[in-house]
Image 1: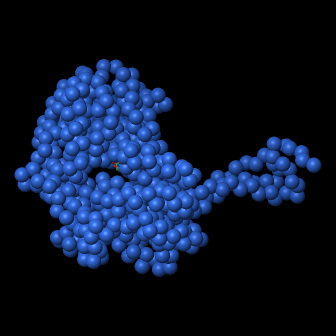
Image 2: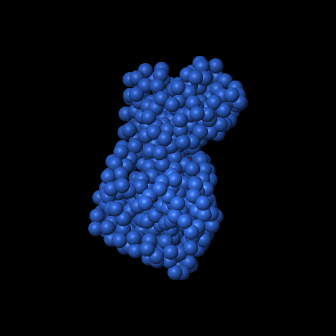
Image 3: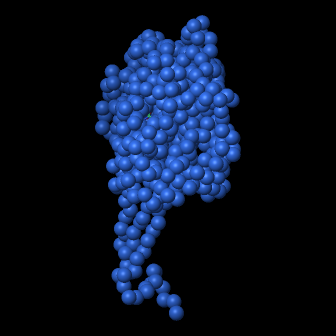
Length: 498
Ligand code: UN1
């Protein structure tokens, strides 16, 4: 199926695809896939209007019935897993396994949300007053604005949307301007689910195509009760305070600078495989990508020899080829940022292996690179910054406490891992003085989290949690209710009044 057929299969017609103003390029070869009409501020306001109207109706639909809509969405995703995965490959450059893996995450979160739709629960709490009962009730919150990044163009939306919808909240989605086609494809699948569902209000899901302008409206409009934004720390620094200024709620998933510690007792086979997937998978463009390797001096040479061999031979190229492990960077800006970071690494005393541009003759408008290893003399400035590219900084340690200190001495706090078979080290890493990240793993890499757990991180990562566990609470408002079933009116704290 060629690109246009694929887009048409999702119901995207030529008129939409060629309306003009926002060209969408494939990072595979730089080809223009479509040229969409970007939405402006007025479009954004209209969508928020419709979403708010939808909220007034949707919040009255029983949650398990709302779950039925998400169940139907999950069915559409199952039926279109390959096609949507392929579109992710075309638009974001992921290899096929990762494109389909992303759709699988969507299916998983739909399943999770369907179950959740019968489990939205509050506490009953002992009251200090006789004949009284206290409880918590969770209510739909309002319109949820989702701002997503190019690197997980569809899964991150689904983590938000599946929960928001069962929680009673319509969604206005602003995908990255680099990946609007996958968003429109999701919208098309959602429409099919809606048609089968029957009586849902209009405006439960709307997609805002464009760059900054419509996004700003979403951030500033007081009817958007929750803004869930995934992207760079720089973006979060703008979005967070703007939403806070109007006392809106924000869920931020920002940069990571994820480290993996390899201790002397580690199973080096497992560690090497985990590092490879974590550091070069998705061409280093996951927020959970392994960016720092903190390896004990006694095993560093052995591990590095393996990694260097694997890095040198990892197949880089067209993500549609079945043998490819590393696809392209998203665009030239990503390549420039990678080159600048490697220059800084060298200037800061590092030794760099790899990192060169590949396939430039065949694809002058695409940005393929050999993933890079940068052996550093210490945690210098460049190591403390997130560069969204396949660069793995390597640091050696001698003492476990030194490894932990290095681990936590960065501004970001998303994901982390230790490879060790020493129980004390493993538990210390997970303990209060261990990893300060939102995700901390033992003998598993930093990336590729399951949806069942809460996903997110601390410090400059933004503090938000989405996906599994009790992340749903961010999409609802909590009411504390006290009910007096006695014939007296005792006041709390034993106060006597009149
Ligand atoms: C992201 O890169 O924005 O844990 C999300 C992972 C994926 C999600 C990454 N499940 O790597």
